[in-house]
Image (cartoon, rainbow over all chains, first blue to last red; front, top):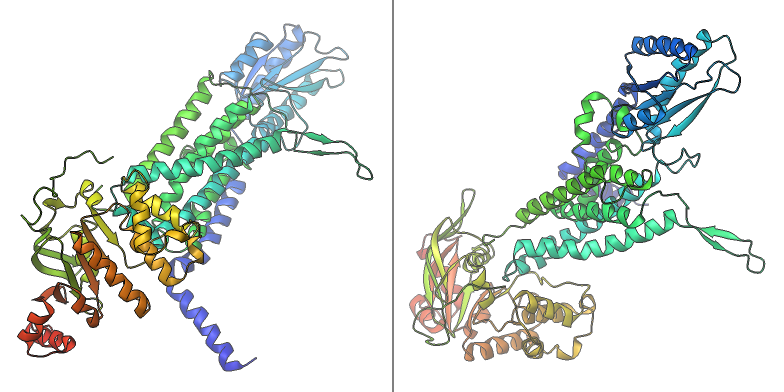
Length: 380
Length: 254
């Protein structure tokens, strides 16, 4: 090791990096922003607002427990609405009027009586928190009101069946998010090459329109995104049993996540999201001069989507100040749409799925438009 | 699709200039990269745009092709005011960087640009590749080509639509003398077939291969004429000396 040469290399690295203001800004700002956001979400995450649909079940003791439960819940700022029976409670949950249904049985107080707690089933993590709060108050109230041993509380969901597969809540979200992430990186870098390699300048000297370029790119990358998503779907939903061959034991390929809905509909959701990611990649490539800078956008553009789309942190538990941002995250619509399909078994006739698809299409069209505006030429 | 109706230039060649610039100005901040440039260029001739680096050659070519919009002044190419997207189908533009896709083959690159220009059929693509002697290399991936071969491919990509007007931005930079001679041979062939060619260079020894020269300095055209006329006017046989003479005469010397 020669000290002079070593010093020269060290100095070159420092002076080159010093001139790259964006890298420096990101080096210091990005970790602060990200750790700040995560800490904020975890620390300031609110106890989610809960509305309970309460069914007293008709027995005198049920009336008493129901009244006490209502005042105990309301003391905790939980809204309580009355429902006549279990199906009314389920209806209140599926149409969004209530988060948790508590159904007291007719035989409340007798041995073997079971209280049913119903949640939607679409957001298992967020609902788990809501259910936990209600269940705590329910147990305390019921124990005080009844002289009998505590009845069992059984969890049911309006959609799907409560599953103990720990990956089930995450699978739809992760499929959508990964597709978005990879398509963004691929398009961003390849369009950046187009800009820096001189081919875009040259393409602009032909009668090709900007819209043709963006649409052509979208079609090309959507093909690969489509193949990727299809493979990802097969991988996560399917299970292929490979029988024992010779010394190899039997094993299974695929994650085998259960889905209630049609995988083709889920595919459509992710594909629309991917189309938006193509335009986003083209748009952001304007602001990058090197491939490194495309990667540098990840903490600014991709990570917030991950944190604010209900993938890890349930949207209902996000700090109130961040809630409006959720609506701006394209991924959040795909995650919602995928849960509709995977868990609620929604098909294309479902209104809320149609809304998700519509928003994703609008986002894709919007970014496509601004992406084509970033391709500069005097003759549009 | 190019749907706009373009004036028919084949019917009456020579009736009007192929390229007309009037009072062109382009500024970048306080710098006047192109400063009040006006000229008429006749069809079927080779015009050499000569000047040192930073004299405004590339910016002028970008204005002439409609890639940039002038702060003042107008450009007409084949009688159509630029910028005009449909008119681009009649203009060939070889950029300073090769501007070809390294991962595509030679044939794929040429066919891609041909399609972008709206060319149907393969004849023009084959002609262009034959002209630059790459017709038998069509299946080769571009990234495996030598620098000179890539340059030739870049030229072919600008010719796939048989443009009547051709802009070449420093086409011979970084290529060996033999290839340079070949390139000028191609340019002459095209000009004899009626193509108007504007070729920029900062190498004075290429000047005599042009029909006419335009000397550029600090964004202005400081002299125009055939090599002979310029030498006579400057009173020197050396074009570099002539350039310096015109530069100091115009008060824009070093």
